[in-house]
View (tube, each protein chain N blue to C red):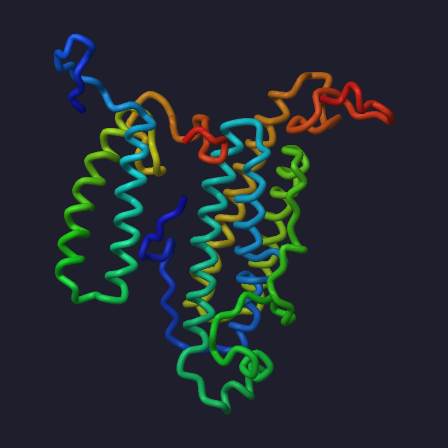
Length: 97
Length: 210
């Protein structure tokens, strides 16, 4: 959830859109990949390891929020108990996610 | 996008090295009906699939093939550990050894390197799924032949698992093909490419094609 101001300058609560959440996941993923590659060659660097742990927790939160509203991003994330959402379009190569 | 899981899909624990066996099994790494070609075939055919069922199956089976590629790599690696030069010569592993030492290189049993000349992406869902059914049978036959040539249970156990997966994939591709044909216009049963045309191609039909 994020807080924004409407035209009357009153704060309203608004759900993150799919695109916003996906952008956040991508940002965390990229930060994690960069940190992992660094840690692979600097396995004793505590600053990088702490950063990795901080990112890991944040990523889990955003992925969980995404999967509850918009379906799985891995085959382990089909939260819907009544439907197999995993195969639902759009697929990544179709330009929409 | 993909992420790596630090485990094999099914365990590979081989006690006795056997470079002669490695020379044969390596064909499922980089041979014509090997796991690398299987993964590349399915993961690249996905783009022109018209149905979610087909996009999903090709993605998930293509991904599982990458896990199988790793299992074959592990088998070849474990079969070629701690070899002496005498063992290498005796097993006829010297020709491979001179080029790759005991590295794991994707090649066929007969020595030619992995090539996508052994797979096709035709851009026609029916044609591609038919190829996939054949590919699973060819891989199953290859595993049958490997089992005929092996006598170490440590090797046969993971090979049997991989052979069974070929049969399951064949079954799922059969169902996928049925979904695709069932969703075609009844007048278009095997007649034209549902990923490209709207009607049956004929000579000079350029105007009516799309």
